[in-house]
Length: 289
Image (cartoon, rainbow, N blue to C red; front, side, top):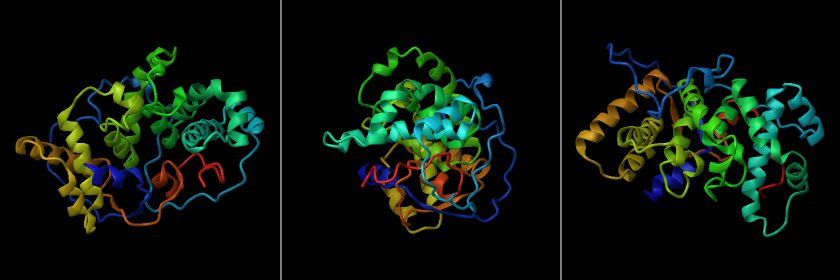
């Protein structure tokens, strides 16, 4: 399983436009991404833009002062809220490798705005920002490093997140963002699952289908066979059903999208969204160097 986990862990891949997807016969209703109940009121308040494989990255700009971002976020600016929430997660992750050194921006962010992580991330997610929707669905709004503790279970926001996360994840998945599937697949791994793993019940069919979807994303690339070979063996009947579900997801939601696994990586947590110009945050310069 290691080759697959390693491939997904650094998947800053280049996305190319797929050939037109072939028409398919009428089939039963398409199963959802997680199998969890989707609460209609938990969907974004505006239409989520579809993933654009032909989009271009937004230009990198100097990060505004935290006070300015917070003022904009408190005034309803979803992108400012997204930026602050993303920076909070980035700082939490950097803390693991900082060896006691804390970036000044991270220190100020934690001291002055750390208690607003959940609120800012939820605000951006309900505004229909795909990056924020996926981050919210994953449970990043509780702070800390994903998977490092179960303290989030006692948060007053836990029940709200548990109720709303499935709808957010399903909406960003249906809008064709491959990272929704990739992060859900990572949630199946004991070492990576963290908050989301606590939400997802065992579901062998969907778990396998999300793996099979990764093979379809590789498409005609030579890595496709290697990815397929790296998948664990399962009952043939389950594999066949999962492959059929993955094909339906791939055609209906992703329009046959293919991804090249061998292109240059980026330090953005959502590289495909970043490369298509649809991310709502940018990393803190120098933080991960």
